[in-house]
Length: 264
Length: 253
Image (cartoon, rainbow over the protein chains, first blue to last red):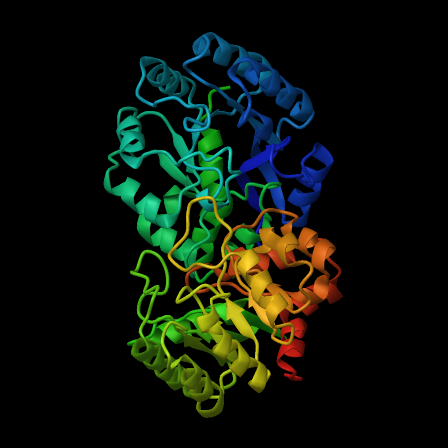
């Protein structure tokens, strides 16, 4: 097996309303990261997914307080619902005071369209700040949603149109299957879109197929820990037939390129 | 020895190149045996799935799989795929076990598993002492026609306590079959919620879990990663990864 160390573009801290999670506090996350050689990570608040709008600033602040002692290891992505409050002013505050490394959007979980002036505004603001926006295409496999919380995936046409309207903004898309990524790519003129790996579970040699479809420079390592077993992703790289240089790009280098562009 | 109890290969026609790629992929995880059920030319998304194959189709898929088994006798074990909706299903089980040397019966969505049309097949499996790999999914998105759920498996298991059933894809439904000691659970789903393997062990014991990947539809990493990444002792992982299934088959290797 190929030995690798990782920068993870998609880890969480907090609670999920429908499962009793393990390792979902700081100590647990560090344990998992060490177990699979993850050196640093973009971290988001799991509480924010099912949080009502009013409480989003609270969970963001809780995330900041939890990770602030580890500014080089845990790089926070704060959840925004651009349609609810003055996003621009709030994001400025997060940049200046809370080590914001990226913005996290859950359009389907927070029930808003990507096609509003407010969402366009946050994309433009992210571009000015050179910080990425992580968009969750889906969180869980629809087959196993909680029966009272069936949230559909984003509509690919809506997503592609939004992305294409913001060619200067860096986006990370999580929760896509390879067929989704392929369909999106067919509609995409945008070059700064990355595909996060943790939901790519199918089919055989899924990593190699994703790289074939979207190109190695667009694939970002991500585990979704502690929601998912991180080994399900690390083993894809460690048993891969891809060249070592490509694996390095996926494991670390593509992530590093994103943080290098950030204006501090 | 790591045994993957739940895999598929494209057949009708099959490709030696594809089989060898899958075997190479298995080698990278140390998987020594692949237990293959041939569902024909469309066995994973986005190819067209044949949910209700005819008897002739099942026979053809199994015959094609037998050709693969002959090429790789040390690596490929076969499941005899049947559709109980057709009266030839019992004969197909006989042919699979006696002529092809297959290890058991695979049933997908031909009928529900507690449909009386399946009972003669189950009785044949009991006669041969072979297990049944039974597709299930407890979902909130609706079901294919005749798709079995965990409580259908429990129903069958209670009616036939002698038969060993490997319930596929459905680790979340562990409590529904907890009371059925003849039901084993495979890990063949891309759902990889951290802790799900440990919880399954807590509920039904480590001896009733077996490793399956659903390859080629699912990546080996996505399923074996759940076991390797679990907090179970190494001895327990070894049981899930192969020893339990050898015991189910009554084989040493």
